[in-house]
Length: 447
Image 1 (cartoon, rainbow, N blue to C red):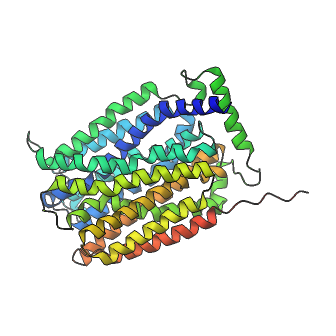
Image 2: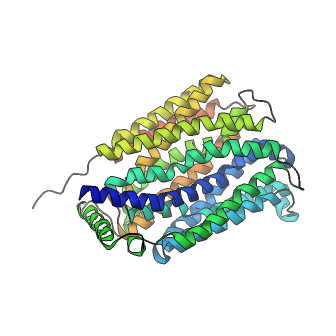
Image 3: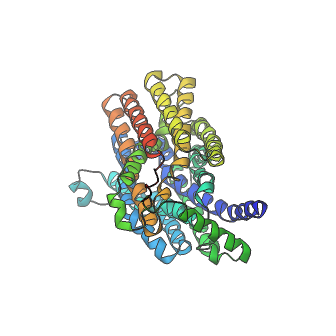
């Protein structure tokens, strides 16, 4: 039976995870490629560090506003149609960044005290967040339709492996585009947006054609395999005490654990998104020549590549041992150490790259284990809404982190130290919350 079960879940992983991984890879690529585009377009369009930091982060306001509705719609209409819709729309919006320097807003931009490129940058980043809203929590919810909790951390880790790999692989690719592709009426940064947006549109059509809504719709599973999957999910749900599980959507607003999870992930998102949007600039600050974009891309790939490998190893070990608390907490402490090193390392190249690697490892390893926690006490509609609500609130950290670093740099002649000290404190608070949230839930006393 164990051999059949392992083979069944291996088949599910082979069928689903590459497609979901590819989708998230492209989502992250289209979300954070603005960090590389900044190296060239900021001076051309007149975007200061403060303007860039705000624009990079304003993406998350659109994401926040539409994430919970998006996940509830997915639960109603099915994953296949809704995930495909998300991919098609974010691909189209990402491609529209080619027009950043061409759009004219006149009095509208002036009323906000902005230039046309600044207004366009803010608007398109916000709309991109609206378009992408719901993809990540939608997939996390979707994986609960297939994998029981004891197999979920590894599956989630393989999915969110897209975050570090999108930067590890995308950074050199973006560097090549910026450095060598310039012509045909477009600048390098415009080619970057266009070429990295088109694959999302193509893959959205593939998802529409290939992704099953759940095990019962998967023609590639045998009847026996479907029964096994549904049985394991039912056992998984029945293994949690009724007093510990929430199944009504409105209950999530009354459960302190939901808010604590959201706060922990908010703090992690501040750290992660500083890396996502500022790492190319931070690497360039180490002394790399201004137009050596490929070199920036290759150095930027190092922290993300190491983080990708570490995340999978830690998540797999967490699933194998069933231990969540320290597999999540210790990586955050590693991030705190890396951030403290960054605060005091100045522009020492090797030490700074090591520190960035520690920060990336900690944030990514924590994230893989973290997403096994909400479904330990949420089910049904509450799982759909709760996962989305936690992720939506946490995404606001994606605005606060990049915006804060931009303002610190602008106000301190490019010095990042204060921002890194703040982020180190965030990592320590998130580690403390993780310890509390992973305490075993006592069974209710017998009556």
